[in-house]
Amino acid sequence: MGEKVVAGAFDLSERRRYREKLVRCLAGLERLLAEKRFDRPKNLMGVEIELNLAGPDGMPRMLNGQVLERIASRDFQTELAMFNLEVNIAPHRLGGRVFDRLAEELRTALAYADRKAGEVDAGIVMIGILPTLGRDDLVSSNLSEADRYTLLNDQIVAARGEDFVLDIAGVEHLTCTSKSIAPEAACTSVQLHLQVTPARFADVWNAAQAACAAQIAVGANSPFLFGRELWRESRPPLFQQSTDTRPPELQAQGVRPRTWFGERWISSAYDLFEENLRFFPALLPMCDDEDPLEVLDAGGVPGLAELVLHNGTVYRWNRPVYGIADGVPHLRVENRVLPAGPTITDVIANAAFYYGLVRALAEEQRPVWTRMPFATAEANFDAACRYGIDARFVWPRRGRYGGIGEVDAVTLVRDELLPLAAAGLDAWGVEAADRDLYLGVIEERCRRRVNGAAWQAATFHQALEQGMSRDAALAATTRRYAQLMHVGEPVHSWPVGLPQPAPLG
Image (tube, rainbow, N blue to C red):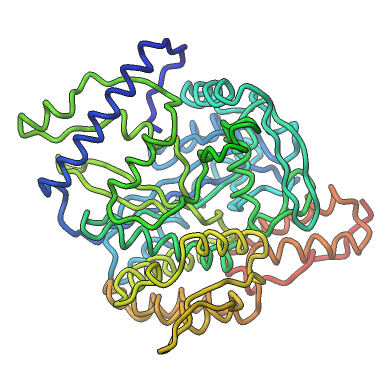
């Protein structure tokens, strides 16, 4: 969304001018694509991780401003609520021992951040949704102290015109309302960036859309919200409902939600930017002085500021990104599917699986998206979010007769997708030691049928059986999770339960 956003009301003329600028930006993008002005292949990847702040009791701490002051690094930034931070790792070239290097950088960064948070009696917890969050924690007064968050909240609330309704039926059923977008802050995720050329963009995006159900199945880590056990990965329904600008009447008319899986396979990056303009009204109609077409006429590279800002308010699970580095424009696919955590090893394993699988799927002679309806990919994503590692998918059959059939997620990942991911990592030039170590983590999760969500749910239920109240069991589960997260062994190896007999809660 950008850092420097000044809150204020927008009048009708500003909205009209912004729409006109968006059209000119889209025309500028089309020209850049036609003139082949984009960066050449660099095999660059990047990682961002959203984090939670919690105290020794496992409860959220609204202290990100104080913690960031102490960290004093541009690698760490605010996120939506005061209990959130985000860490950004500089882009790396895919190849060699890149995943081990990334893991070491993240360990160093998070250990430092955790020490600094400890100075204000808080700590870093890397988890999809902090289980101890209560409804009173997710209110507008706990949004981070930055104009852009206040402004985004005000514009989404104004567009909706009424309270947001959260209604998620999973293992248990949660229904409640919110007067702000603050519940969205409960969702802390990992964003994986991949720079791609325009010619490769559609194949990579389509591959990422097909792959995201498998990513969630093995990586789910968000089973709790407001004391309820919901989906194994509850972030997607929560994110959609907490940012939904559509009142029920517009939902009934089929208007698209701003948090969106999409509805079709694409043939160009242009398709996604064009859809964003066609389907989604501007939330932040702030105009830049640049005229993108005049800049192009003069031989320059336009920033496309309005297009970039608008794109940042449409929450696709695989988002197209336009950027400029060293004066040269580039495109990225931003994969936003995964929850944070449980450990750095798990995060890097998820990343290795993604980058390998997407490369292999994008280069198949008969790509999966030519053999599977888009609606099937969306249904697989939904099943993965609901059931995690126990999900069942519909997937193209191998062999001469083809067609699609139902398959257990673990079987699909272990027998078909992990070998593809290994081949993809080989194609990137990743060393065998990195490939085998991190894909081995995914294989072990499949063998033991354990991911972060499965561990959280099993530990919580064991605490209940030992006599704890629900709130005490969630807090104890969170504390144990944080302890094991900092030890750093991957989640498939974590012992279920609390380390000693639980006292009565």
